[in-house]
Image (tube, rainbow, N blue to C red; front, side, top):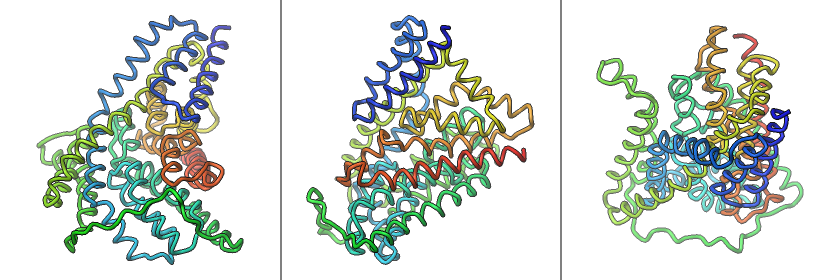
Length: 449
């Protein structure tokens, strides 16, 4: 009876978490309140559950991932404030043009997120340029958030092997894998998400033209004047080279050092070195902007704290969930789903990512709670843990983009669009299609392993 009541508590806690987060309340206080609901209905001592399990889970996540969050935020802010990211985006847009407006928005997002820039930074960098592109192409401004989300919130965050995004690094700690795990599966997933997603956005643009819809100015948008000083002709390379350095230092340098017997880095160590390399290259190429560099570092450092705290608090909530009796019922249901263990993992990560509104937070909860069992079952059938890594990463980029997701709320706020105006496109390209791909791919792939 207690197990059933506890399971009800987990469900109520998740619903309350989603509702309060959707209403815009900070997860820093929402998560412990919802964890208290779970603890009470689970028969736990609330104070003990908070001080030991919740705080312990939150602190453990911060200890493990603060360097990556901190350096990633600093790197992204330097790329932003020095104009490096914007110069690269401008270069790509000048090559593509407004004739292919959707591609001109999506491509810079894909390239910058694959280079390790935070998707929040990408939103702020790309939106002003996308605004100008859609105005020139005479497309409704409300279609722009869908294109930005499609480029920044999924494929290069979860699918493409070697991406330095945290959603691709977290599984390495649980499965002993690398950032390039299961490359074939990742590329197939990327194609299965990219093709229908892009065709959908093009269909939406074509349909809007048929209906006679036009670009309508955003009264709150103010375009910043171009810098008065002339940038060097190589300035757009300031945006490209750091991205290449980060990707190469994350995926090539560790293997090279290991083969030479010099060092054997974990993925946690490799991502720190890679981001430091990206920061160093960006600073060197923008040495003439010395007055901008220190403020950018400060802003990035300050910005890293809310980002990791939001995710860590969601993990703390999961730490309480996994010790109540009802979690055994939930865990058994997840582990004994039809199909292979890959499908079970895809379902678990999707559900928890959707519940927390966080790809990294939901995946961390799932792998912390179920990762050892997934790994054990995979070993029993001789399955490479690389597939578990890639499925977890892909699945984290599905239900996380429900309406209460922080990145979704930020994107809509920046673009001054309401959910009813723009969320449909975000949902189709960044939620529905990735969820279907993660579930179908994991189910089918598991049949052949």
